[in-house]
Image 1 (cartoon, rainbow, N blue to C red):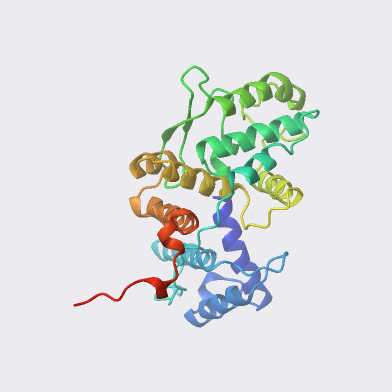
Image 2: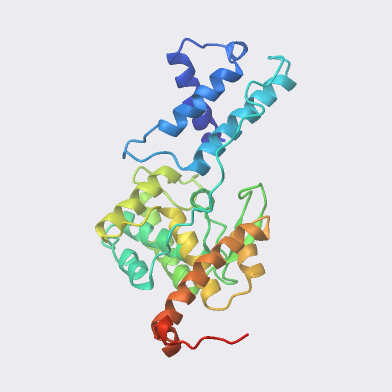
Length: 292
């Protein structure tokens, strides 16, 4: 919900700068101009909004105006029939095993925040859950005896259970015993992961800390928390996991969402094949002509 408000706030700010104050004043031409604005817009770091991000922003706007039509606030939807940017399968390059271990070793374990961060990073790597799914976890969610945790109302408002590895469980246990009591200010707080003020750790705050660890590790690959998800899924498929099992763990509603990761795995297999198979190293000129 907060993400949707942020996307709509971008349009509201843009419209306000142009003297557009009420939904009834918005025309299809205005929405098309906003679409061009999204294409040219640059974030604080100088990077453009990804094509898929532009699509989501415009789709959110279209859904908002559709709701206003149903509420009889406006007569027609000015965002309908937009020619949306073409979707891209922009998969980030996953972390290597060495990169992953380097990042995992960076948190300062002499501080409660460092122990918390290590537990979060291990949990990301073990489960592939999304950042909002991690920050929404409650203290009673992690089942240490069964090695599972519930993800309640994940993307698409679907509940699921995911397995948690022993190493991640050990770090969560250490955080619960040694770090969380130090961070906790209000005994009534039930969120598992807390910030330095005893409040629930926010998704944006978590992303900032993960990106900082990547920077310190010298990793320039795009992404932060979600890169653990890509890495986990790719590693499982590389090691022979059934794609349906990976789909269930990630909480994908459609198998096509999970199949994107097979392209990364196949590319890595091709690289290994080219580097290790004797025939793959032969120049093409050395191969015989085939007769009809």
